[in-house]
Length: 76
Image 1 (cartoon, one colour):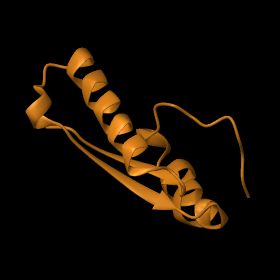
Image 2 (cartoon, helix red, strand yellow; image 1 turned 180 degrees about the horizontal axis):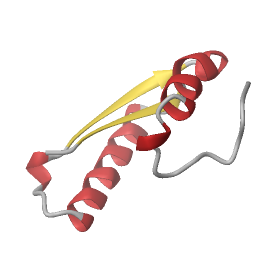
Image 3 (cartoon, helix red, strand yellow; image 1 turned 180 degrees about the vertical axis):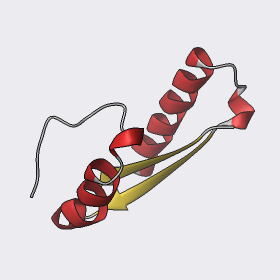
Image 4 (spheres, one colour; image 1 turned 30 degrees about the vertical axis):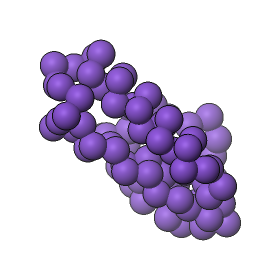
């Protein structure tokens, strides 16, 4: 039962978020043994001015053991 949390800069439409959730769901179904009904996806908007504080430091730098795809940028 995977639950995916996507943190993304504000500004995406609900339609775009729905397409993202669908694509993520289909990727999980295609690469794991779970059914579509077992997947949940949450999308959280983050102000870009708060990205370093709310996402980069706690989720990227702070959890290296769970980071499977590193970003190509670096923040202070």
